[in-house]
Length: 455
Image (tube, rainbow, N blue to C red; front, side, top):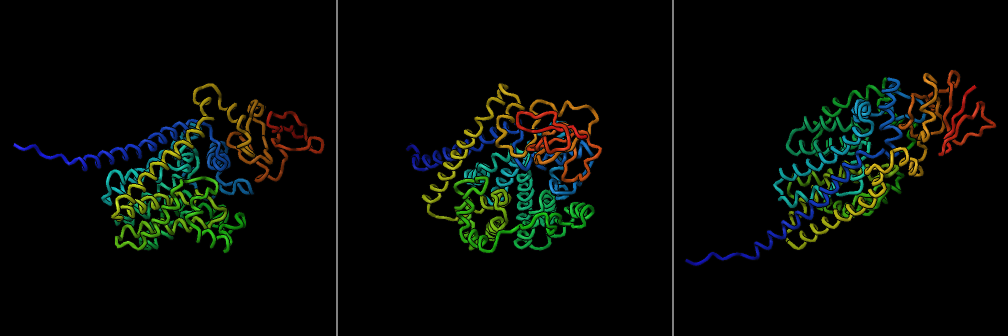
């Protein structure tokens, strides 16, 4: 009997696919581990220390929701994530809120995998789609922070999943959750309704209605601080907007303040080309990706965080577009580029993680770590020597000038929402002239943060 012939070419192809799949998964898995370690490190993000963490902590201290004045004008913006943070901060400090963001990042990757599975993509192309999202600088550091952008991104990715399945009700519900996380998702609602139909508007606005009511109750403006004068301009000037739209691939790749990946500009071009596809779902995904990217680029000040909710659509559209190309060598180049990009971002994150090693290994405590990196924490209060913590029980403390107050160890008020200083025992500030000030300077810590005994 003749022996069956072995097709070496097909065996080699299967071997190459397996190798590529493993090379795609390695950065994803290692970044997931690094991001998880970041959950247990001190929060250093500006916005998190300003309001994402401080507002729920103040609710625990004061049971106060709205803070008039300039510092915490975000207190009546949508706060779904910050509300979830309240019990987590009570029992876990920063770990719980950070873990929510971490899980939102992983969850978004899983949603991308699910959408690509529904669209009959191969395992290697599903891994490409996840890598294009998860192996980015922004997703990595946000996964270990108490920001809310990944939470919003997860909600919008789930909305995309359901809308592609034809469920406008569930799609609208998850867009409502996104709006309850950040007002900018109103822009996403406009984009999704344009692509998938206006029927999603009602469930989205119904779910997000409590946040409009809360804003109206406290300020008389259901969209506060939009149209309130607090935020003077939300969009770039016409000239700047046109320049950024025309050069979208460049400006998406350019790190406004948080780098995404070297491939995001290419992803936009692929999504743009996909608008001509005869495949209806690919056109819909590509339209969300393109319109979302353009919307993000006309906002002011610019930030790649605004692109993040549309990154899943950019990744999915790119994968599907590559799948329509008949030339295998072009697909191979794209897959290899994604692999290289993943390892490049992994290398950058490993370098960035070096500073946390003394902390994670127990050779340095949190207070020393934060003090050492204080130049990266402008306007942040740190009680380096526990002087403020040890002030007499029941003291009324007022804070001035300092901006990010999550690490403040006591109940306090801030001069931005308190005009009358009478009745307060101490003022905590920075850069005050002791001679001109009506009070006694009783302490200055190593960061030049001052404590005055008020007369």
